[in-house]
Image 1 (tube, one colour):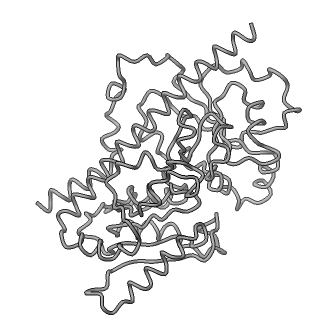
Image 2 (cartoon, one colour; image 1 turned 180 degrees about the horizontal axis):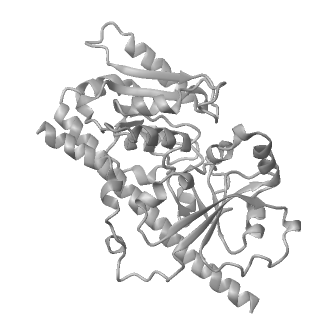
Image 3 (cartoon, helix red, strand yellow; image 1 turned 180 degrees about the vertical axis):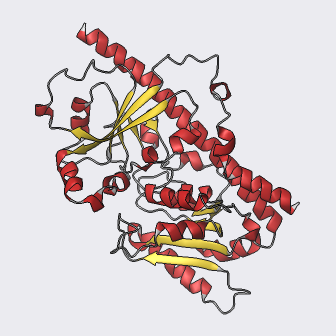
Length: 390
């Protein structure tokens, strides 16, 4: 039974091994009408000239905007691994975002009739949504770092879901680029193996910056209090690293945060991973944990955002409502709940597999839905442009 559980977890944790055999027929409803389109979607990761100059002057900043601006989903293997196989995403880095007065009217309007996506991390004075639309008039525009949903309706697509922009295209965060690189290095080891939950060292890990959400400070206090409680029947084996400040360059010399190599090692050896809300309830950590075979833990107030008093992104985790992760009423329930679950190793292993299976289905649907959105929207854009210029 134990061998069967291990095999199941190993298979669930490596979807790309089986995913290569999947075809469009697995996702395509023959009764629906999806416009025929070029099988390549060009993705322009736009930077202002100022930002490009910054990277050219300081090579240590090469990945700064990929991480800071949420470009990770386009730089990892998520789109390929979970895509339907209908399209290929062609990534164009350092795409220019010029002032609209410097863009000749119509100069790019008919150059490319294939679907294209113009991506901007966050609006700045020299590159905002209006600049994106005049620089890439035939492309779908996307914002990737609008954690506060301030630009919910300014772009055609987005990371960070909100029910106020339900008709917009949406992609989940996936793994952050630096964490994905670390995980790839670990997975490349000859004896790499995804261990079942019951064979892992830590009951849970808590690795996060304290400053991105006031509730995280309270969580830290709760963990310290409960871990040092001498009345506890047994001290849980846990791993904690609480950074005093957030640094986009997690692995840099001046960072107080845990290096992503170690973070992924710890997640691979943790039954549960605490995923408290940061600037947004959706975090990279949720995806990174599941990819490492660890089960995310959240509190109900972070999962269900139904008022702007809680967060500006209404229903931010609506697509996670049915996720079989561990959801607590309060962080004070953390220790007794985890201790109780650890009393049943077989149930833990089953929960781990169930979470991974849910995640794979969720990601496949999210990426496939986004492909549909791009194909349909781009076809309408092209038709409109042709009619206008005729």
